[in-house]
Structures are given as structure tokens and as C-alpha cells.
Amino acid sequence: MRFVVPKFINRKAKLIWVFSFQDILFLVVPAAILFFLKPQIVPPLSPSIFYGISIVVMGIVLALILLKIEGQPITFILKNFIFYNISPKLYLWKRKTISSQITTRMPEKKLDEEAEKKAKPLPTVTKSKLKDLSSKMESGQ
Image (cartoon, rainbow, N blue to C red; front, side):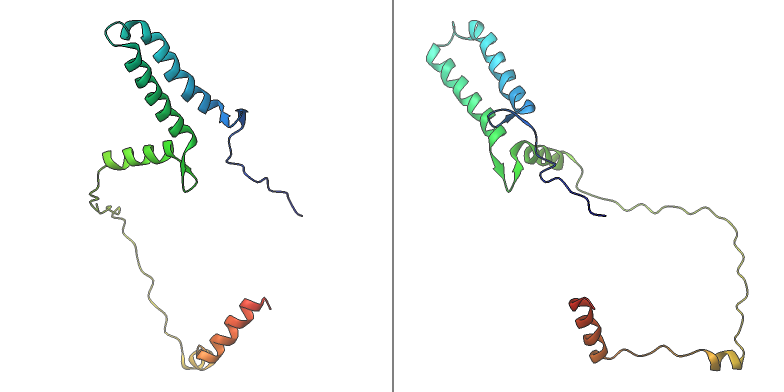
């Protein structure tokens, strides 16, 4: 029975243009913070400096949303970079102790001479047989 496997199952649904819901939140939250901080920040700073900072912040947010490196979003790469840098780099091997259960071993039975004669030795594999087998596997026979 054949099944249709959907393609692009890891792709996020786009709501507006190229932005998904998560991307829209990434845009709206910094924009709202800048909008509500404007009255507190602008009087000590000139408006041109505040707008310059706002453009830089929103540019960084857009870069985080839209840019990808080798198919991976930059947010994913930054998250992995941070976790790699804060995680310990030294791994110490710790031996696991095995519970001390007493096990008894069955004595090995020796094969009698007739059984040894009946037992076939393992066939030896030569290079030509190995090549034949590999060619059969590659051709699908």
C-alpha cells in the first residue's frame, strides 16, 4: 500500500507575506517596546538618535527573522551557540556499577567425535565471491 508523504512538513504557515505567527511576534514586541519607550527616551536624546537606534533594533530583528545560514534560521543557530558555550565541555566517564548478583555457569558440554565430524566447517569467502555478492546486491538480484 502506498502512502503520500507531505513535503515541507517542517515549514511554518505564513500569515502575512513571508511572516509566520512567531515572526510577527518577533516584529511586534520590539516595535511596541520602542513605541512605549519613546516618550521617556526622546526628551534627553535628540529624536534623530532615537530613530537611528530604532532602525538598528528593527533591522536586527528583521535579520533574525529573515536570514538563514545553510537552511537554518539564525535564531536556531544563536540558540545552539549560546547553549554550546554555557554547557560543560569536559565529559568525565563514570563507571556504572553492576549489581552483584551471583550467577552460576553451566558446565560446557564437549562434543563427541561424531558430532564434530557432522559439524561443517564455515565456508571461506574469497575476494571473487565477495565481489560477486556485492555486484548482486548492487544490481538488486
